[in-house]
Length: 420
Length: 158
Ligand SMILES: Cc1ncc(COP(=O)(O)O)c(C=O)c1O
Image (cartoon, rainbow over all chains, first blue to last red; front, side, top):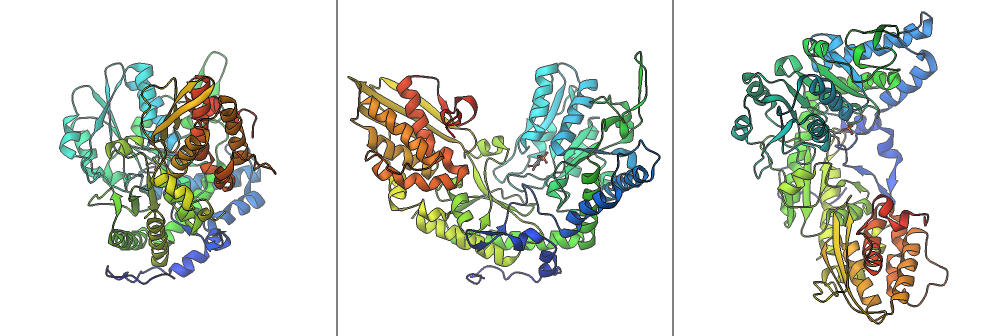
């Protein structure tokens, strides 16, 4: 498409048939931007949806829809069955022990708020400490700050080094007798850092503290096994996993979920109601008050099936090849600073072109058809750590190609020329 | 819109060598402008004497669009009566939100380089921030922000 790769590694042949995969994603060919083919590199914000997942919505509303858990009629049973099958799909995806450990939420933000409210609300009190890291998305900061303001718990933040990695010794030093909860991201959305979550979970458990992992940027890139990790909670969001918006997941160990109080009251979350007393339903229903996102949960399962069919191992391989190729090519331009140089990194490149503001970069890249995210990525503390207001961020998916990396690099070099 | 129509020579030049950039020690009016979404953060200071803007300066960190807009704004209103500056603020806001008037006033002059930003809605705020801030300074109101109630462009103007 563009200038051939000069110098850096030749892109390794991918085991994936990218052309065939791209044909599954209608938007990738349907959209042109400023007369140029769309180069979609904003997958970290929201990924695109394959035809299989789009069609699942149509099939559901054409053949299966009714409210769930409350009718004896055919459609209600069909919908209930599809919804509960989706729960089992998620269970297998995370390798949870039981399907009742899977709660459907609106998004990962909702999942984290559920835990902050239902676990934090019941088991944390004034003076107790919650540990997070400097890498968190606002979604894993603000709910804890709200709890702090409400109950007087304290927030402790594990620092990161210049490469954007959590400093494990400093993380461990934060633990003391008042530490009552840990909530950390699996993968940084702003820098791509893959945290050593297994080690961090083990440290938390050595101190007898439960831990939640924000997997919003992880599950689409790597296999996650919550039993092997032994985390107490794990959360992710559907729209970054090639599924729809409006659906998220919270995994929680059954023993913990059972002890927690529901965060919202209403239908479906009760066993019996009189005006004197309500008996809550069992998990997971206790946490799914009201009619849930039935269609979206079913679509999420279709997205998981799609990802599984391609295989997370092949996905990771291709994305890592894109990452090294893009990193080398961007570095070879000179004058572009990459933020986030962790040894273990997902396919995210946060960068700053000379002293050109990222918003100017984003606008000019868009003029070349290249979609990147610009801004603070809802992770302002990360930006503050590096003393910058924002970055431009390219985040890759398995449907991205080496030619698209070339298009990105060419577009960046045009920005450099313009601002020379 | 092809953003290259926006990132022209003149705007790039004002970004690189902003006019009236720095502090104004004996300012009579000041305001701070913040664009929380993208982090544009500027200060505008004025010296008003006999209803005329005798001196003006700006400083801060921002994207090229915001900086060039601020630079060209200061050049346009320096030495002008307050009433003229206020009219220009209004005309500039109109141009980048609603569209250029069929017969733009001569005072708008080179500032019409920003007319194209109307088609880049996510960037309108960058261009308009200096003008909000000038407006706030002239009226010595609270600081300017491009979010929410304090956004003059949001109050029924578009
Ligand atoms: C690490 C991380 N956590 C949380 C979120 C919030 O996701 P959602 O908006 O789907 O709740 C995001 C998405 O931007 C993210 O990247």
